[in-house]
Image 1 (spheres, one colour):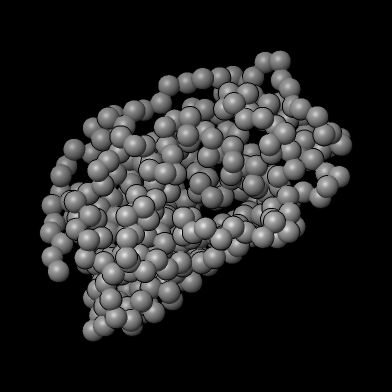
Image 2 (image 1 turned 120 degrees about the vertical axis):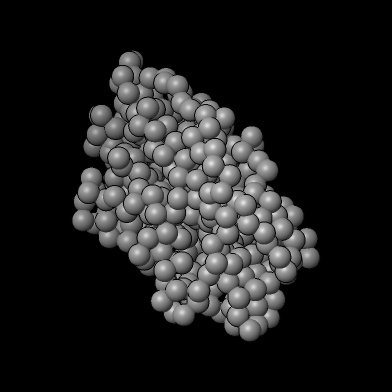
Length: 322
């Protein structure tokens, strides 16, 4: 199975007009998908681990949480153990604080996220891609004019976000947002800047961005199946399966595999260094990163372990005491 990370998503005549398709390909016609209840029914065992590790040092207490950036409102509440740990925390660390009010500089956005003024998205697409784009935009009620100057990678992000929203998965119910809304007097710190995160997606070559774009336009059945696999693993606390799903790169080019290495493995090293700095600072830290960053031989948990920081995995039956 191919899995696009949710951040790693993805044309030859000059064309500034709308895209259009008479008939959608069969795999882009509507299909059913599993409901939240059906996902929960797959994992009834109450002793399953959850995506949280606890670390202690002489200076600090730290809870490391693996998140899903977009969730259904019905997938709540989150495990009690997360709530207990959050209540004890003095600091909230996230990849990027999406609630902060200082916007990105418009000139920076125009330079790094948009195509040149005389170039439009469809001018980079072959006929097959334009047809698939037309179908998905119509089904997701997206106006092509709103994305026509987006780089392919940014367009892929917007399309994937809309497809997730269509299935009920919203960023406002994602793990980070649920806790950022209740940060209160806690100090909110970022593991990276918004610019760093966006450049990871929009700076790769056009060929790599088109691979991301293709991933955002997979058939509905495949899109739903990938989502179900990821959500099932997350609900089961199965970090190794998530690492395997995201580590399966055999369908992609060598350049794309290098891009995914930077997106996951390289960032894992940076996250680990930041977490080490928190462990050396006074306070109780509640650290949230995407679940894909935690498992596997190059995941943050193993990297911390290699640096001498042994975490305790919390189960859904476990207690979180001060």
